[in-house]
Length: 326
Image 1 (cartoon, rainbow, N blue to C red):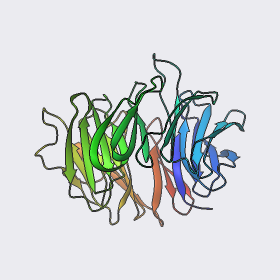
Image 2: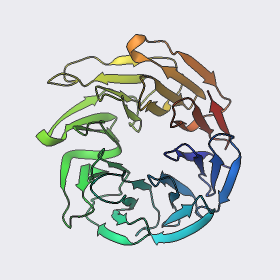
Image 3: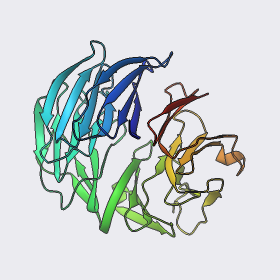
Image 4: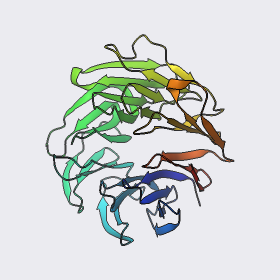
């Protein structure tokens, strides 16, 4: 009944979850597209979705201040957790690793909480200077970055103390780790993008965007970062000793309104872009500045994701519709 605020595939590709901003969470069969479950979601609106790495539990956060866990095999709610503030902006699972069982992180207002798979509270932090806008786990590590005013804050679920701050004067809205974990990119309220060389505590700032930057996507090798913040796709070459410093980015022009989604394939070289103009485009930036394919919808696109096998794109519209493109 309302626009699709988030889409998330289970890691094995068996299920696709779609959240409506009005609250309900629908789970579809990944092959047939048939709806399997319709969960009540969050009474005042759902904000974020996240799959447990083994694909059985789906987590959601919403404007009722709760984190909810859903068992998609049995079609039932297994836990309702208190996020610690009036609304839960983000939920994010750590991946499976040798460093322990997956951990669920939730951001609610200035409160960050870590949860076990069974819903037990592991640790809480209330030290953020502002509302936490985004969460991103470092690839393969139990280290979480959280976006807030003053830069990106680093946390470890097994440590009582915060892991540090990648500091600057401004508000970060979106986070993206490079695949090798050496760089963290932030999209910012003041229409800039920051690149952080985490181990060196060195950063670069790129500006000139039309609007605040919420769209960030690394290619599979961690060399190129695609950014939104306007009508055109802007791609920075982060290779070399100095990274993108002093370089001119590649510009991909096709959209007629602001971008809403950017996503590289995890194993391929193709880039998905989608926007408020209803256009979905697929690019291969290394081979040229024209899209390989595109499709127009009659409404703005609020969410879009690659399927795990990268053979399909699922698009969510502001009108509440879902479309599968292959």
